[in-house]
Length: 256
Image 1: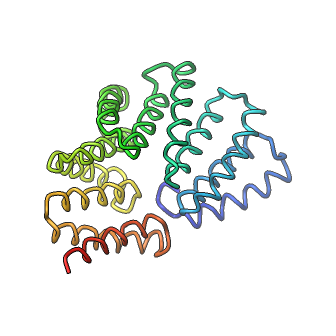
Image 2: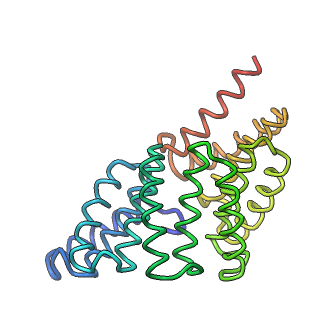
């Protein structure tokens, strides 16, 4: 799944889950773990509503079987919040992440990677809700701790840096955001590979910062290249592909 072979991952998870349900039963921890990975594949393939429904059901089961504060239960809670954000239900996602931050603080402490991840996820939806200075302040605080705990090339650090650049861009500081995004993309290409979805997210944001500086030709070139990658890896109907296509079309229409 980390290599982007999502169709294969979903099919493999369904095969394993079928056997686990028969041999282990629906509430065995290994069965629940396979359901988690299956839902990750479904969500990453862009079927957010389906993934949301699955995560809600899995959350109920894990809460009953493992307890409400078990790390796997809280991981399910985190991923449910992601599906809400992907569907642009940002107020709901913020509420979920606020509750998750509070729980993870109590269970893991303030500097645990899980707690820092939840804080970064909450900040990302705060940006979408327009409270961009609040998001920037939170992300800078998170990054300071994550760099100390995880190191500069950890995926959580790279994602938080991307979210910080988005918050900075939303305040009109496009050149600052561009510099941060280019640095993030350079590391992500090396660590994650150029076809990873986080690279695609950062490249889309880079295109937006270029537009904010009036550099339309550069933005179009960046987004056309990204659209080729997204279409090949995710398919033409995937929501991530559609977002890039719409952004590119908006720029091209504005120039005619």
